[in-house]
Image (cartoon, rainbow, N blue to C red; front, side, top):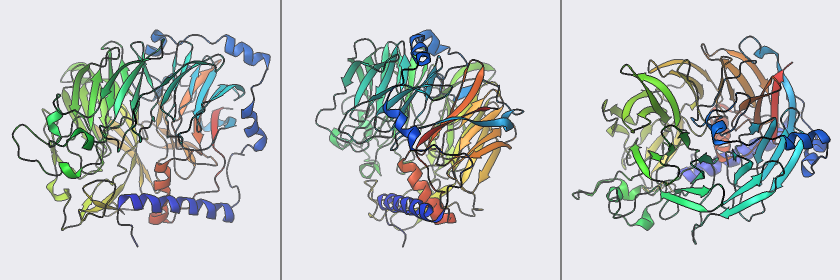
Length: 599
């Protein structure tokens, strides 16, 4: 029998996931292309080596200055998406269309298992990796040798964190118990430890990697069901004390406070910020996305009161803030009054594009519908949109303002089951896109699944009571995963690669003309950026549900990705693939970092 609400869907799918994993363990052998490490390798994480070479590597670590963060060397991967502009792109090209066929496993390092979607950072030949259990590892980036290990001791359950940040001699770590910790990059010793004040409220979580700008470490706070909603906080890099915080849900009596149908502050929930902000040093602005609210019931229909509406600011908005002060310079709401949990929280990428004959800095971002908006980075002016063809929620877009007009045929209804595309997990989700600014191509992992909705009160995720049952796209050919290339210069869709299983990782684009992407079937692939042809692939022994990176040491380029970490999105997709296609994952190995290089 089909589950009757979203939460029971998630629960049933997670059960399906683990049942499938158990069955796989019982019925299959190892079967992986690349040999796994055994228990001896895992135990090496518990102690620090005293090798003289390691000591020298740490001693020679150089400061990650503001200038280096603004213009990082090609060899390094210094922030969540490598650069402040969140493009997920590297200028390295030793591994390219011609050489990628010779890519081989260089080294492999087990990490602590659990809820995580980590992004390794690399500077001066040292890799910093944040793994589950609030563990930070410093590794020799050429061979995985452990340099130091730090574990934060806290009481909270490990949250799904994307990574850490670097600045000067500091490694900046958001923890599961809502601390920001600054570690010495050369030793792992604690420099300062700041507990973020949330009063008596529970339900907050830190998921994104921090952004360093304006002398601050800036962090978004997830708060799906917390009264008053989420916020963005800045902590002084030197003092380790709070500088400012910006509340992402407009307060009564403040600008935007009249956009919540007059409901009180304690009923305004959501506005989570769980994706890492981008930063433009020239404009001195940080850009963040904000999630919607789950308390959709009071916002279903406007009150008809003069001066009051149900737009629910600042949900589904891009915020441009001054990093030193938290001043709101501009905002743009992509979709008002989201009744489907199809939020616009994802990466804000900064690109240079010609618009009406003028080269402009542009913020490019898409929500779960897979609909990309482009905004002027300095002013927030709407420029254009590109629809990837996955959604039926928006029927028209104002070409001047970008206002979205909802399709009345899919608005939640109490009498009629309506097919809404995509389903609430999105046509795209946390799996970040990447952009080659030289060619103007954007590469986004996508998911072709819809939902049948009915406003019958049985749904428990959204307070409207909307029930949502996942279904294939009408007329589906059995392919649920897509890697979509979009030409931002022509504003048109380019090639797409579609297959039965769905992507599991963010995409990584390089100057070698390649796009790397991990899949739910444990495969890791390299595509040709111009054609979408698969040029190389390998099978890992676990699902690569994280953020791949590339870096170089002593002239040698590496590709790295973590596989085997649990997260709820992976569980949902395993359950869906099993239900729609009978897919059962291979025998899962331990959580580990996989690093590849040319022979």
